[in-house]
Length: 491
Image (cartoon, rainbow, N blue to C red):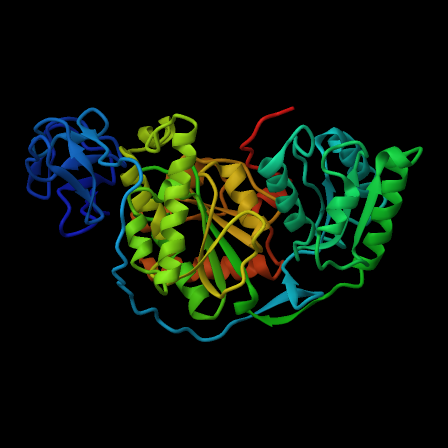
């Protein structure tokens, strides 16, 4: 196994694949101080003010002279990022390999949709009935054969009341999308009755939905909402028993791309691996969605170069600048990132994080830009508005129509949302330590296993999850939550 990696031939820093000791000689460079695994060191002398290059792009500039062999991190590097920028459309497309079509097993839904799970969703319209929703779930589980469906999921959240304007509309739009998600074979929409998110208005604006599989209950209208809600869910369960998996092309599937708790290996192992999967899905006619807009800052021009046309390019520009505007509207700078965990793992600046993060998008053209309430319409790679927060980003991906989410992590997290959320470890030590959280070990790549071999193994796992043969760890652990992005006053 190699002890270091130089990711791009133009880089002036290397990354330690193992802990390095002062005095070690790597790539002809004498290490001048201890370097922790995943952290960077200078391959050549870097003068104060010069760019630090990783992945072939600047990740910031040197705050002082850095000697070859010195640790390169927050102590001597600062971001180059600022506020809104001007961009020019300069297309730079890559050739994506075509692949042999693949057949998977799915549930056919109305309106030409497919699902990869046959789950029963209980969706509260307001946080006041979260406890009632959980009681209904408990009663339902005690009266059904749990092996016959793919779980009973409560999409709990604290909102739906005391919200105004676009903030309230954002909650409504997201809940609309969750209610109509094709992974749900049955849905109970549970209202209180006096909330701002009124049931009648919610239903009137829901749009096209399967009236046989989506039912509504207002708790204040009945004597015992738990008893009535349980009866509704049991009736839905009986209908769901008739649902069977049928063959469909993999092109029917939409996959979300997300990273959380990144480390110095994220851009070396797990994220490039997920990028290979994204290109594979796109080549078969499927869809993938990349979100976490703040974690595109510093690498956004790479995505802009791959916009399918100038109109899409302008959409990406607006996506980036609008999110920077969100920061400035709250008197915050857009580059207060990475997190303490990211820094401990070897990530120095937001550019460093972004250049690793965006590798999850592979090399495909960007087809469209989505916002809250939008579901994917165009096949191929899509970008989705939203923050980097793990819970919010995964919820947004599910609401946009993702059947499952590929979630890379170098620090580890148990979280999962209402769709299968596969955790991909960037390093083998995490995969071994948190077997109850991690679904796949991309750290094998760092350990020297052939990348194509790892890719084939990962694709096999993904198809097994789609087919229902394997459950994601978040499903096994019943870590299935949503979090709604809030940007408004509370009454």
